[in-house]
Image (cartoon, rainbow, N blue to C red; front, side, top):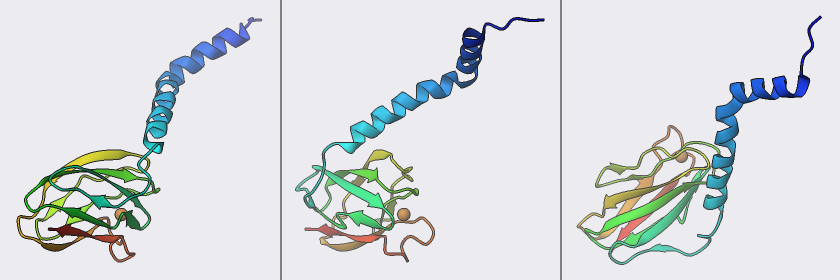
Length: 140
Ligand SMILES: [Cu+2]
């Protein structure tokens, strides 16, 4: 008959098997916590390259309209607070951000159109534009 040192053996096996996951979980919650804070309201307006946060969810952008200066280098924080992947496409200059996973946030830099005007923006994930995931980029 074999004696098992229950607790120890089990824990060691668990650590071996789930060590990576156990490490990943605190890191993820830390990231989520970091994303959770701040950046509540307000419009998305910058004169000459400041920072704008756009929250993405099903199926909208908040704020839907952002305002930038012609030709400015603009960095937007695309924060996905939804449960599907989303991205941000700007018509006219054909700029598309990388896809952002749910719960993640990325900084994405684009060069604003040199021509003043209002440009359509939308999410390129299939069906999202049709479901209302659209916005405007005001250049003035
Ligand atoms: Cu989308």
